[in-house]
Amino acid sequence: MPNKGVGRRKAVSPVIATLLLIAIAVAVAIIAYSWVTGLAGGLMGGGGQQVTHQLVLEAYNHINVSKNKNIYVSVRYVGPASNVTISRIYYDGQSVTVSPTLPKDISIGNSQTFTITLPLDVTRGTSHVITLVTSDGAKLQFSVIAGRTG
Image 1 (spheres, rainbow, N blue to C red):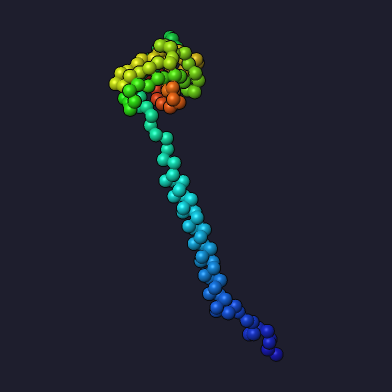
Image 2 (image 1 turned 90 degrees about the horizontal axis):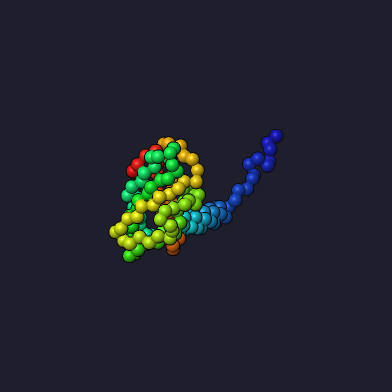
């Protein structure tokens, strides 16, 4: 005896199927558009912070770390303003004692050597970060290696 229900199932009509496919395609397109515009806006917007001062690390002397806790750092101001004021200096994120005393103005084209008294013992061959902070809040970082000159 044949089963009457097997061959008699009705499917969704072709018109309804076409409308469902169009609705799904439009929804996917809207989601993709939103994602791409959000990504492009994040990459293209903002533009980052403009450079306010440029200092060049001319030389450093980090040799006698076992005998004294001083490092000598010479920086040259290359612009773009006529001068810059160094208001704070940090060594690996810690505030340090500096000679000459801060704040210190440096004119464009001129260099200044700072004697930094280290707050901690350092191991030869380790890398450290010196951060100079200007009076307008710009942070300039330089990497130095204990036990070397550069």
